[in-house]
Length: 483
Ligand code: NAI
Image (cartoon, rainbow, N blue to C red; front, side):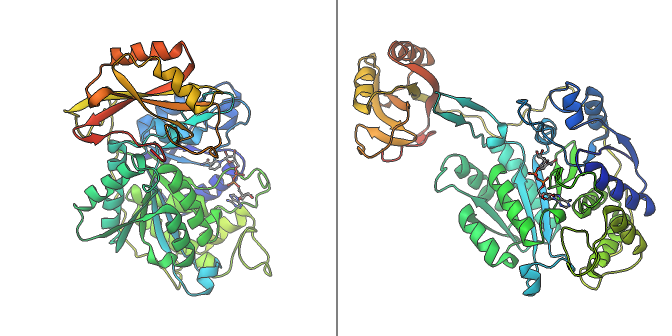
């Protein structure tokens, strides 16, 4: 079996070297094809941070094991870590946070055992990075939550929970505020949950979830979240088990999977051979299991757990009263402990059953669609305009141009209604949303809307627009605060 390996930047090469030494010493039957990705590839002029050869190799082999990579600052380039996850549709980001004996935390000292798996949606949300300055004062980020994307990651989470014999799966969300986007994610969660009646499925608002995680983390098992909320909650969980040095991550897709640590390149300690390789090693162990190399995974994990349990540590954790090991010596300590079992949490011996890699030759981009809309009617438009006028003055100008087809329903500023009713105390910025709906909710055409757009453009700069659709009797848009 062959996999692609990218060493990464900063501490990346040091911790990758440590992990590879452990793999080789354990006789892991994998071949490695090293690929060029990361900061120095950006510096060579590849704007996505990887060479075309690297892309070809990863797409051919289907597995990428990677060290952390730096995103050059001030060059306007996007993170190669995020690009890789999105380009290859690794829609589920699985992060396991477990109590590691020998790694002291508030909870381990209190005898509370943590075993939480976070499944974070990995492609969508604000990570689309679709952002615009609408005026000099107003920035807008688009947040995509899609039904196919949500179903993909939620189904993965339930399948994983079933395999893990999980007692509970929880959806973290903020659908009380983001009723349409997080509402869609939550709807998909409860839809999928019906197919898994044996698993207790519940949902918790994300702020409440954070509070509960830091007070009773042992009550949680599998948690599925949208991308940004998942990112934040998983770092919180890393803190619960001892920090980023212990947080592995697997990016799972149907064709390509990426295994990496949660932490970054740690530039403050790079090149000093003192970084903790545990998170990358745990990611590598997850990869071995994914490839069916169960015995290697168990051997290495047991040796790692034994090494931690017996008090060996790098400088970022452990008993400050005992000398810390450098990266190389920590890896060697793990190798020396092959064959030993930890007192707590030992992994069972299972035989290797290598997974035969599937040759994915895609001829066109897969389109994922879950339902077709039959009864969609356009009933209006939101026009986002730039103006320094007061709401009443904006309304007066808009009302001159409604073409006998539209009514001006509401004007809002940063989502809060300021016309026809509102408060003088609502601060304004120089961008308003003017909502035009058809008279009597009759259907209007895109041509009608373009005509309206042309008229309003004679009064204001229109920064952007959104159609207002009705699906049967359901509004496919939210109301303004106070509308
Ligand atoms: P970071 O995770 O690199 O460092 C945060 C702190 O944790 C630092 O004090 C660092 O020394 C410590 N730390 C991290 N990993 C450690 C380890 N294995 N052993 C011991 N200490 C460790 O986060 P930061 O500083 O925000 O990011 C640095 C760079 O990494 C940035 O360019 C960022 O874009 C990139 N990054 C890359 C990621 C990836 O490749 N998936 C993820 C996160 C950040």
